[in-house]
Length: 401
Ligand code: FEO
Image 1 (spheres, helix red, strand yellow):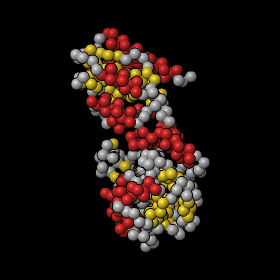
Image 2: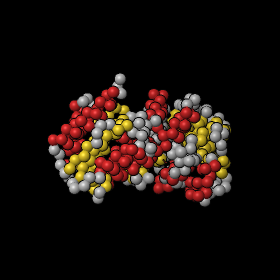
Image 3: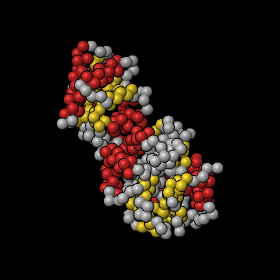
Image 4: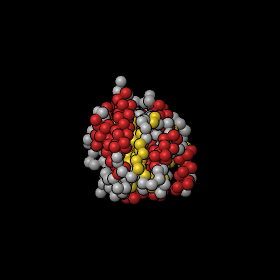
């Protein structure tokens, strides 16, 4: 039997680890799994924060019952309705028919739609308070981080922010629950991947949410995925990661994402990459779009300022994997990137033109002259690729000043 884990006086972790699911949202790979976090405050009133994916409801309810130890469950606060968190809601209401569900107007609409529950729901507004006894909750509506009903709940007594998906990570929490009990470094890349894959389109709402929370003293961040953040430097760090990502600010470095059927277009990518290195750019990340899951390519595009895209012509269009990447970039309203591009064809060129159309639709700064190759590498194409690599390196180096 699994037991709830005490994080601090009155605060218990009753979430679960999922090492079974292959794809989060049936889209994004989970090689290190994911956790669905739920927390319980035991006070004069008892309050649960979010539930878990319904596949893990057995373990979740065991932990909850043990933690409550015969006491009633007074409130379920729903910070986020996506079913990885609300999935056990229907079962929870059956087991605890008197629990009052706390959420905003949009939450209530989704509870009715997803779970056909319309009674005993407490609708709260922005910055409304709910006393539990010693603890006092304040609700902050943070719409579109990343659904319209998303909100965060702040416990003014212990300075705990229940943040929903915000500051969450892929990866199970193995052993320890808090950043003091494990190596937080292993979660940062998975935090960036979670943000870029799932939340990435919503930079502006995330900025608004950060602004709204900026005056709060935060001693604990209890997100719905990944570790609980308690070390002041780690709290600062995860907030700054979110701030940077939501402003679409990238580090010095270049992601080269390319398609290549028989290796010819790849030779262009290799030439450009080597020239970047020769010019002193050390972060050069090459992604073969057919081989690497797009989840990781998108993560890296969020990390670095430079982006170089290459594609063969296929069916008089782009190579399909590159098309899919461009769509993912567009969906996320990416900003603040330097973009160069190249492509190839065998009898009629279309790829370079189509990446050019994409480039025009973005606000990216276009760097260098696009390179187009017929069939295979020759000296003029090689030299043009070198020139393109140098132009991108020069632009990045200019930003060092
Ligand atoms: Fe973790 Fe948006 O669900």
